[in-house]
Image (cartoon, rainbow, N blue to C red; front, top):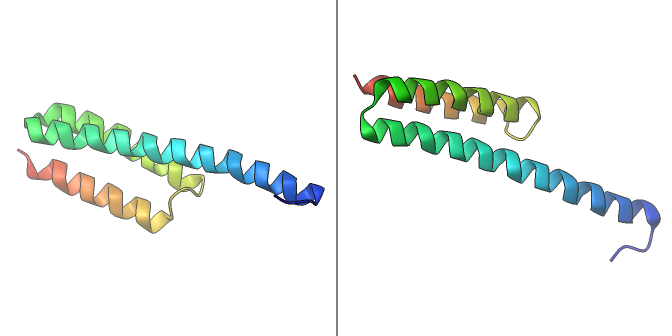
Amino acid sequence: MANIKSAKKRILVIATKTERNKAARSRVKTFVKKVYAAIEAGDKAAADTALKEAISEISKAASKGIYHKNTASRKISRLTKAVNKIA
């Protein structure tokens, strides 16, 4: 454990940020799973709705620096492509 006061504070701050990042990543994964579940069911309307929500969550995570913008873009692209395949 750190002895210096500022180092102790950094440990606490990093722990807080780590929890926030984990929660955001988990939330994104949940929304992505909903999209794939709708695709598996073959429900185009539900997939479109789930896709819109997932894109929103991924974009929020990217804007907060949790995902790199290219990673977010790739995830959105792959999801959109998968939803567009079902007709």
